[in-house]
Image (cartoon, rainbow, N blue to C red; front, side, top):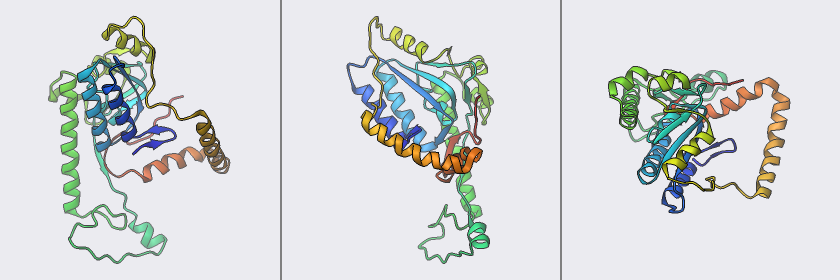
Length: 269
């Protein structure tokens, strides 16, 4: 996905990293991450581009408030990982989710479904029925396989054993201060510190910074922001404090399959 007005999707981010890797005028890359994670496949797609980029030029990861689960997964190939002592990170874990709205449809809305299918599992993951035992087993196997890949990536990229990674993994969440002690990050600091390290690794004394993906035309952005502000403004006035729950629920509705993300929402004040 390309992402939304408040986030960037795997397709867009992967293209940006690839562009930076192939551009010979770009001597180093700083990847800024502020994410609780997301879809496992999307995380793997981004990880591959980060890995390829790190093979060709210095790549430094800079963590924001949160870089957990899939957000941590994608930065593991970096030469150096920079984070704040308060950054929420780790959450090396995987879960699978498929919404089951059968009771909502049948009991609340009075809607039932008649299904014609070619095979027993053709409608696997459909919202109108729960998973059967075989499908649950398949999902569990997929979760365990994905977790094993996660462990392997962290172990290889951070020069750790799989056993060591598993001992600090299993979904555990760490502060940046703790993460440095256990080897998940390297240096404390923000974006400026990450840029300094990138310049040092690339032996650059003078340089300019290019942001990717490039920002849209200011006029188009203004129109988009105005449209978004009007819609969100109406919803916020109607929902009040519940607006943030609506926003989170809207994201959850589009969440299915194998996930590398925090299974809860974090707000830092």
